[in-house]
Image (cartoon, rainbow, N blue to C red; front, top):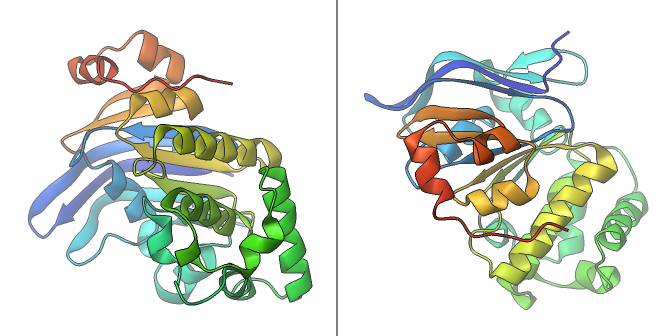
Length: 265
């Protein structure tokens, strides 16, 4: 059995004839937080979208494997489609986008959207779903879980919708959470709050998290291991301490010189 929960093996990705990812190999253990960092266009978001089958029109994994250690078997995510992929999305692998609010329906309550998301994967009562959500809200220090469930997304700020989006992604208790720039659109105070919540979810449930960001300060706060992407290539990869304290690549050194520092707590 594979000991890694997620592993990229010599992955190439093309959009048409243009190669956007070249020969990337990396892996992560269960319960680990992996930060993938790089500037816009480096290929970092493409990597996690490939794992979810969300490359979009013309996007193809042309070489290599993306292996996920599922509940019962190892799955090559590049080889599954349709219903098989839908079964994994949400239930085993959750995803948080940069603008989680955009994925929420503005004219349906959070509670209604919560029920729909869970009932697609689990046969449990609405009461059980509601209890699970309220427990999550409480653990993440939301003081008004009942009110949130009855509210509509348009009633919330962008930061609040992002936090609600994390709860919706976690209510199914996925084993792996892919987070694509989850804090970049938020102000620094809300950023720190969201990062604390993501770390707490890992600590509570052992959830493995892949965090894509352009900000090494965010990686420094949250990640265990760091992968640095530049122009579609993996230029540095290792423990957070090694990469941030002893960078070998010139591009990594440049990124470290322009970070937003977030105080750990």
